[in-house]
Image 1 (cartoon, rainbow, N blue to C red):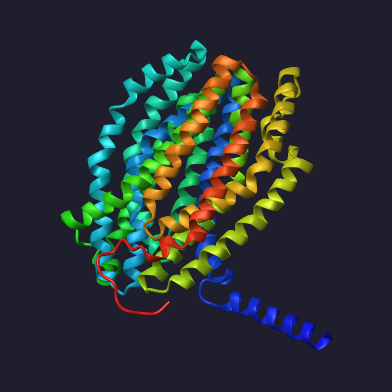
Image 2 (cartoon, rainbow, N blue to C red):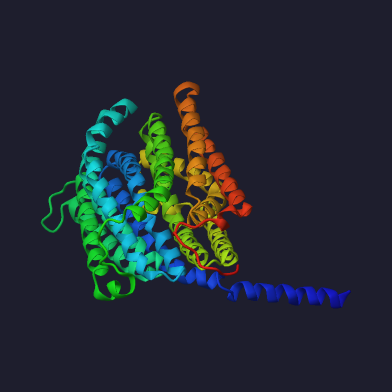
Length: 474
C-alpha cells in the first residue's frame, strides 16, 4: 500500500513538472503575459493618479470624471473591439506559418479606425442630452460635459493605435507594447499634474487639464506605433506595407470583431448604467463607487494581462492545430489569475487603507464618512474577485479561438439583468448603496460561472478565424 502511495505521489509530481515545462504551461504564459501586465498596469496607474489629482482638486471633479470616462469607453468599445481583434488574426496567422498575411490584417484594422473615429467625436451632443435625462446635479453635469467634450478627441487616436498594438501582441512581441504604453502613461501622469494644478507655465485647468493630458499622451502613442509599424524589418517579415483594402479580410475582421466590440460596449454600458443609477443616490455614494471601482480596476489589470496572454497563446496554438496546448495555456492563465486575485482580495479586507491612502489625505468629517463607505465597498469587490478573474481569463481564451458570438450573447443577457435590476432598485424600491453592490457582486459571480462552463464544453477548440488550416494533430 505504501508503495502504491509513493508511486502516485511520484506520478503527480511528474505530471506537475510536465504541465510546468510543457507548451502552454505557466512559464510560457508568464513570458507572454508579464509585459502585458505592466502595460495594463501603466494605463491603470494613469487613471488611478488622475483620479487622485482630481480628488485633490475637488470632490465634484472626481464624481464627474468616472461617469464621463465610462461614457467615453462605452462609445469607444464597438470600434475598439473591431480594431483590437487584429490580435486573434495575427496570432492565428503566425501560428499557421502565414506571417505574410499579418500586415494586411493590421491595415484592415487601421482602415476601420479611420472610418469610425470621426463618428465618435460627433456623438458629444447626444451624450449631453443623455446625461441631462439621468438627472445628476447641475454642477456635476457641467463638469462631466467639460471633461467628455475634450476627451472624445482622444477616441480616434486610441482607435488608430489599437490594431498596431494588437499586431505586436499577437506576434508575441509584448515588450514593445509595454515600452510604448508605459512611456506614454508616464507622459500622461506628468501632464496631468502640470495641467490640473497649473505648474511649469500651464494654466490651472482642473478637470479640463486632465482631459487634455490624455489627448496629448494618446497622440504621442499613436504616432510612435505607426513609426514602429513602418520599419523595414516589419515589412520584410509581416508585409506591413500591404495598406490596401482587402474586402474579404476586412469582412472577416468585422464578422468576428463586431461581436467582440459589442460585448465590450455592452459590458461597459452595464457598469456605466450602474454608476449613473448609483449617482442618483447622491454625491457620496457616487464618489465612493468611483473610488472602489477605480481601486478594483488597478488591482485587476494583471488579470487582464493574463487574459490577453490566453488570447494570444490560444490563437497561436489553434493556428498550429494544437487545441490541447491551447487549452493548457488557458488553464495556466486561469490558475495564475485565481492565485493573484485571492491574495488581493485578502488585502482588501485586512488592510483596505493601503489602497485608499491617496484619496483621503484630508481628515475632515466628510472625508471620514466617504472613507468608511469605500472600505465597505471594497469588501464587495473582495467577494467577487475570484469569479471575475475566471470570467476574464476564460472569456479572453475563447475569443482567441473566434467564439465571439457566445460572449456577445451572454453579455447581452447579463447586462439586461444588471441594468434592469439596478434601475428598479434605485428608482422604485429606493434602496441604498449597499443593496446595489450586492446585486453587482452576484451578477459578477454568475458571469464567471457561465464562461467557465463554456470553456469546459470545448466547443471553441474547433473554431478558427483564418481562412485555411494545415493538417496536424492535437
